[in-house]
Image (tube, rainbow, N blue to C red; front, top):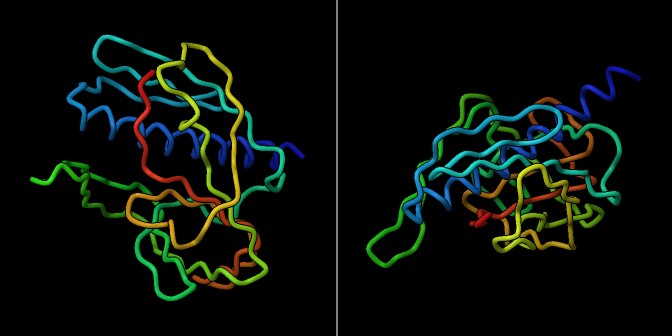
Length: 185
């Protein structure tokens, strides 16, 4: 039981780190300087441009209560297979001449194939998009997911998967993605 709690806590911390990374990318692109990012089991702390906030996230109730099989970032897609990079991710978001956000990234761990079938439940994590300047230090927020579409998953998407793993391939039962986003606390 304690092992399950630790694993679930680890998954929550990873989700928070990935949400923080999306936030940081937005801050860097908007010219606000990031000073530090840290996390623990209770939340994520972000410091930038003289401000600091810590958020606590409660997992969405309609997601599986077991630990996810895989957590990582979109690498590429081939038909109904999404390839997910794991380990430390290095992403460098920047604006091109047209003002569009582009990014180059790499992973320190292996890449896994995630097969999405007609039985896979697909959710989009929209937790941070519901806030527009309303995040406060110490605030506890509820993770919010809504029905999603595989065609929306792409570069810089963060992915969490529950399903059956065989080697480097996972047949997904639940697939959650988070799109890159900018949040202004």
